[in-house]
Amino acid sequence: MNKLWAPWRIKYITQPQEKGCLFCRVIKETNDKNNLIVTRSQHCFAMLNAFPYNNGHIMIIPDRHVADLGDLSDREMLDIHHTLIKVKTLLTKNLAPQGFNVGINLGKTAGAGIDKHIHVHIVPRWDGDTNFMPVTANVKIISQSLGELYKKLTVKEKTRKNEPFNTPRLKNRGVR
Ligand SMILES: [Zn+2]
View 1 (cartoon, rainbow, N blue to C red):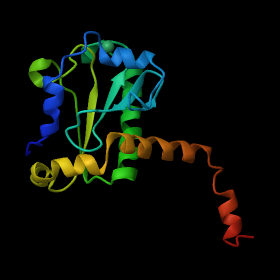
View 2: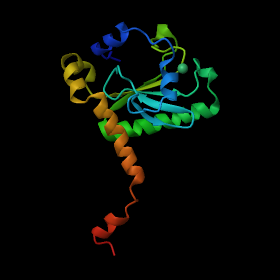
View 3: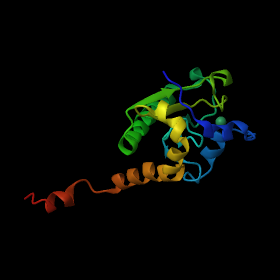
View 4: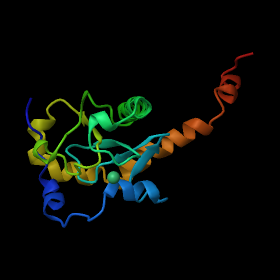
């Protein structure tokens, strides 16, 4: 597999690290928009990575501050899995990726930025993204800012939920 080149992540690598746990902080806060939380479930939540490896990079995070796979209960694992599917569907509908990388980095050595609070990464992939990203990295990030992407992923979902299912449209199409 070719490596993704994400030079904007240097900001994340060089910035001072938050003292407490970032994930535990955002769970308690109520401003999901500011924290880029796309959806919350019973035992976990999904948030956009502010320093993405690719456009649409999302993390699924259990509410509980646990570090290892074996620390998660069956319910938590199932909820994380269902949320992962939900997020994948959202990304497919909104960004039409051709593939995904899904994975967990366990430990700093393996690349975990926050190694004490386990999280699952889902990274959308497009044909050739490893090739053109070095050239167009800045363009890509500017063309779809995190705020815009957040709006895209959340607003549509809310609209769908509240929309009465197919009744008025069918009438307008002459269904008797
Ligand atoms: Zn935590």
